[in-house]
Length: 236
Ligand code: HEM
Image (cartoon, rainbow, N blue to C red; front, side):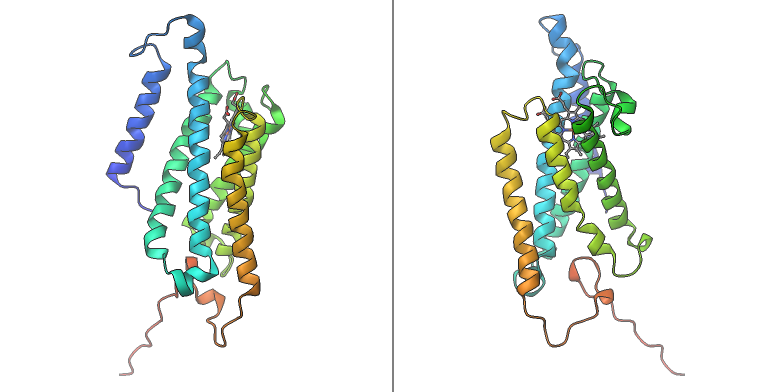
């Protein structure tokens, strides 16, 4: 995955705006308490944005890996760049979410609480789910980038664990978020269709009749694109 200059500029601009927003430089706070809770409020907004981007990323992944995509829809060319771009922006907003919560005293998380599951003073178990989701995301991203880390044919199987990561992030958001209850409609409206989409893909893969001649799985690259055929060396 290549991250272009434009993407880096956008991410840098968002980070700069957040940094300015949480300090007193551009928008002076009306009272000390408002100033004190700004990083925490920004962290929550970043978390919600990261969650929504992650949801879209999973939807794009479901379209790419759906059995019908390789035979009928053929949307890989259009959807794959979105899947990659959403990955980059999910990471950017997630990084802001975690850094702000780890550094903000009001949040009661701390650096150790963010990185080591169970060490957060604020809601240890729900926050731990977020940390585990983070590590699962790192694993999914690393194995997707360096597919050779895994034995042949394992890449896509392992990548499908991403849906478990989404469930972890979903549970974390609902239980850790101060607005978990108020935002329930949003979490249901995003979580349930993704769950239904996953079930649909799984079901389609199960009931779909196998083609008479199918390529061995190991010859398929990510998302079912056939690997380039090796050209035999010419005989001299
Ligand atoms: C090291 C990893 C993580 C840590 C330490 C962490 C920490 C937290 C904390 C402390 C809260 C509660 C904020 C509050 O007081 O309301 C929270 C909420 C939230 N987090 Fe995370 N989180 C992590 C990973 C994630 C991940 C992977 C996602 C999703 C992609 C995510 C999305 C959210 C969302 C949507 C909320 C709800 C915001 C609200 O309603 O207040 N977090 N997180």
